[in-house]
Length: 427
Image (cartoon, rainbow, N blue to C red; front, side):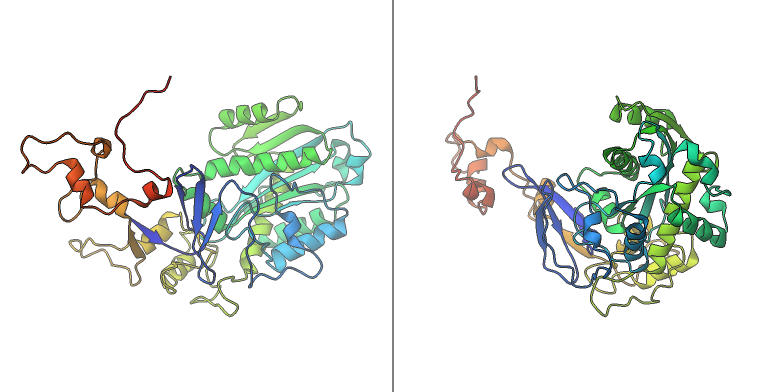
């Protein structure tokens, strides 16, 4: 068995002797960090990350003990977006641990003054498929009575020209009627989740991001009447899941394919998500070292595997800084990144090219023993830890004798165990 050692977006999950899950994270410019995955506190220096002078982006990190609250006014909301999207200020420690930023705008006055009138809210995402950069989720909401003040021209943001989409995003940011939420899932967060021992897949992350945003709006005291969602997976199953989670809140969920092209709140959310991702990619700040610049710089195009610029950038930057694989803009869990890191040993097919830079292969001793080591010895069975009866044939080598020739496993010393003499069934 083997694995590939990569940069910050790789985490290897295992269990310690006391049953706590441990995440081991490797970074190119930091020491190895061991963190309990259940902990919400992680103190990590981010030497390369500098937050914007006008806004501390660390307050945008949601956790079980620190829920994100609405920003006080539209000026502060735009300052938060500037820090996050233009200055690319990634708050510590989301690069290596925990959830990425969640921005909840100020609540429009037209909603505050009509608390009994539920809002209409739409949810959409951008950047689901790229091998480079974050996935962004967004929600947009407003009071139905204020629909006359909502900008016209909302359509699926992917079908809009960049100029039209940027203009609509500017209108949303300046509107005193539209509230919005932005959730950023950086490549490192996606990779950590998908490379767990039990993978936390992209559909589950997408559902949870949508649920986080809805809870953020509800926790701000905003009543939601109807929620339009561009589906991820089977629409009916997704709808039932949302209805279970928000039972008792009297929200009507409309979950459909292409909802962003049918419903204005979804279209507005699509504009926020797409524009936010494009700005993050365009203004990306490298965190590997203070002077780090990858080969080809930021000439990676859209970040999609089908984009020739992205494919070339990925190939040119594979394991340039061994053994860490790629900068943390890369989703290590994506097929193209795995393929670039994986050494191709198939020498029989001359049409396949062996990568110039292969990943560092790590062989895990426990996995190796499962199939026997080079001497042909098999991993010891549970029965071998019992005290064996004296063999009639003294020349025959038993399990216990074989164990005595092997080095004692550290777990037994740590737990103060000597040897098992009998199994006792508890009552």
